[in-house]
Image (cartoon, rainbow over all chains, first blue to last red; front, side, top):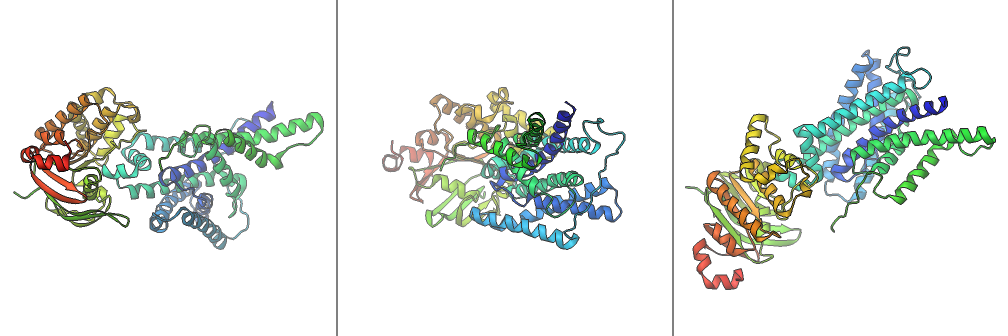
Length: 301
Length: 237
């Protein structure tokens, strides 16, 4: 039982990270129909920025806020400078640009900060935080911070005029223009927000996976899975998908351990959890191609 | 008095295909003007061209500003309310959000609230459905919502693209009565594109007839209505 709860808690903590990255993917997807393959590397780069700020003497939370703000500006600039000229480009050109961005961020981080794996601090106090034995202080902190960020984003989109304008621009850009919404800026803003949310995810996960230029590779894969399971066009679904995938992978490992304990036969364990989790994801998508919470959209062509 | 909207030698293109060849017309301040013509004559394209939603060539002046080539959203912000064909509401947003989006740049919350009340005065039915998703409204209500949203922009000119399309005759009569009230009470000039020429000529004071991308005739609504030749050759009734 104890072990089960531990696994569940750590699944939720990982899941909240996947949820953030998945949400970043969805924010860009709903407004542009593009899946940003560079989202993970952008988040990694943001995490390095926060590390650098800490090296310069800022405390963790100042570095956190600083890195998130810089990431926001970075996201806006990438959209305005690199993607704007590709507005009417075929989808493959955009994909190539995303892969290029991925490679650029990866090697830039390596060139600036080296490929050596670095330790990354946790901001959460060891003793007074967490529920002893079940969820550690860092895991609980991660869940709290990401939930706060998700709540803030939800509030922004749901209750502010600017959030409303962004939703309108994503749903029907031409109509949004006709009510005076500057759609191009809304897209850039979406990129900024996605980069900022990604930064939060990177900074929160760095203590667990350590800081190195390839830290987000696996996480981006999980986030893709999360977004697809939840329904790629549905922000709430993507968040749910993140938690589902996070818990699922740990449950796979847990079940494998239990089976091994009972029968002595090793079938699956920690090593296979990614594989099995993704198999389950593929299975879900075969049955429900639009995702668990997605709607099937019929497009007129 | 200078006209509110002045369009001169307007051409429009969809890719390599030319849709408008030579369209010139004027809309006086405060009036209702209608563009008539058969399917494919270029009525919708003319409206789209005014808001720079197609590639155009020619001169378009609105209230003394040269608006040709400006971005759609900047043209709209000069207070031109465009109600596109097929209604074009944000179907997954609520009625309330659909209306508020048109006022999202305005800081003054009280003024926006007053504006909403003013709009509900014309469309009381929308007030009853304020929290409903726009996609769940009936066709007539969606058309009302689209007009109401354009009204939220405090427009000086309203471009209406076939407001009667696909609606029951009774609803159409109701909507046209409201349009007349809006024109009179809000001093909003209207450019109305209609398939239903008889209906449009009853409402409008001035009419232009388009054929294959050219203005082939124009005149006051009563003249156009009573000219049997025009009726038979261009308007088909």
